[in-house]
Length: 130
Image (cartoon, rainbow, N blue to C red):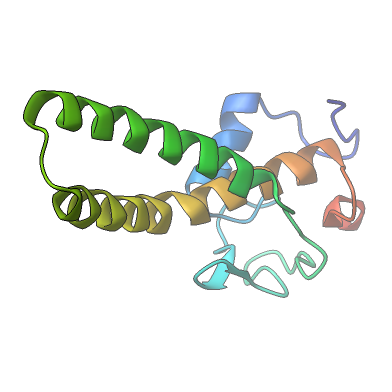
């Protein structure tokens, strides 16, 4: 990944940190979202145009493999240890998947947006840097 030369040099950890905090990728203070997974049109702090920011399907793929892998492993452990009926599996794992998605999806999307901005990828607003 190439760094946008007009941006201040930020480490990968700092860029990921901006994403995890769900803040503007340019100033790091303005909120990235106006509602659940809905990116603001403009940063409220630095006026960065966020309307073109799109993380695509990247976060979804990581969430499917990450959450799916964890839940599958735990379901196998429970099945081998206790062999509960299927309705018990359903009542445990479906809510767990929904809660994990609700907690992780906004952060994963924000990390992808921050990485796109700092590497000047796709239609990212990084050309709008002041």
